[in-house]
Image: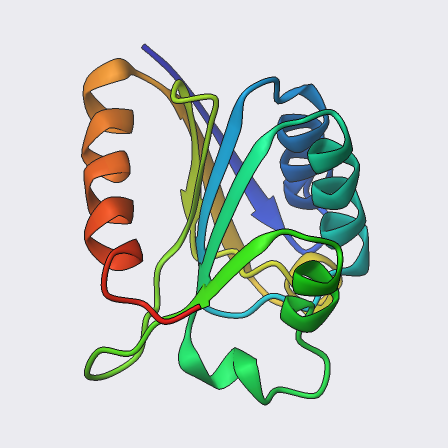
Length: 145
């Protein structure tokens, strides 16, 4: 098992997320409460261009949020769904290639990277990653496209 911890502001969180996306080869599943990062959105579009399968579920507030990258990603052909359950979809995680997990309090926003006090961990562990993949499947199924 490998675990690495990162903190913001400006503690390597954004770079680590971008590195994970840029090195992806097969799939990226994202459950993110708040997503306004242009850099991360562009990296996901580039990954799609490499034929990486990308699925993103966001909290329902991201459908109307002015700075949300959801509409941009949809226009670029990435499958984005909005959580329709009770309460907030407050998860913040990504599973990359079914082997790498990025999670923590770090929202995918510029403010999270350069202003907020956030944490993020990267885990490579089959058992832990499998649990997050299962949770993603639970969130993904009932969400509306």
